Length: 256
Image (cartoon, rainbow, N blue to C red; front, side, top):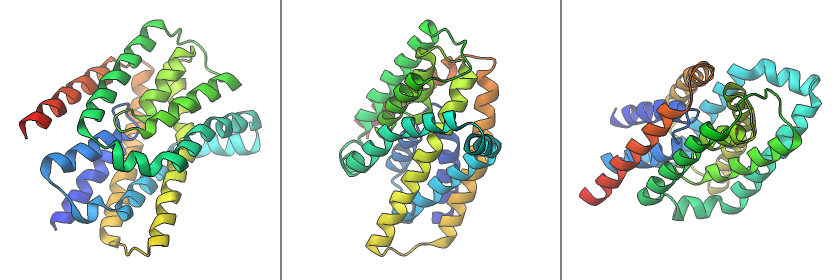
């Protein structure tokens, strides 16, 4: 029962923080670290579940866009392919190094603060007017997405920020960020699944289902919330949250 509760909480956190610009990895590293959680929730199987849950969220919210992209808007399809290459290469080459060497609370503190500063600068200097992407936008935002592999960066945070620096409208930058994240999240889930098959791991299907469903439902809510929020408001709420979270983690690191 305790493991089910942990899976539910972490699935909800994954669904929310994967799409809000506050870093899902930071929360999924820090919460088990603070409470001393381990076991089945700290497994490849559970990672697969929450990745598939957030992938479902994206497909549910943007399936019409994907249908249009595949059958009508081939230029956008090419931009999404171009934008996915940097993160795909970085994920294959650096995944194990990042998982073993960069999941450190102090690194997360630094990235939460630093990317928050970038978000603040992008709000000040970005024109926030364009509702279309060019080749150069897709390439630069794709490079930015590769840095999201580092805990604390946030995929949506860094890609929306890159979009704002390129002059994109806030809500449009967020939508492009979500479309671009779809193949990245699918690729991460496939990579974890391949590793689990190669290692011959068994799966706790109850925890798998709970992680999947909770991440999927909260992911849909988070996507819709952020798109509506950014049509009216800047990123400052999330910037301040990142800095407060960084301060809390920094204090806990030295008090524990």
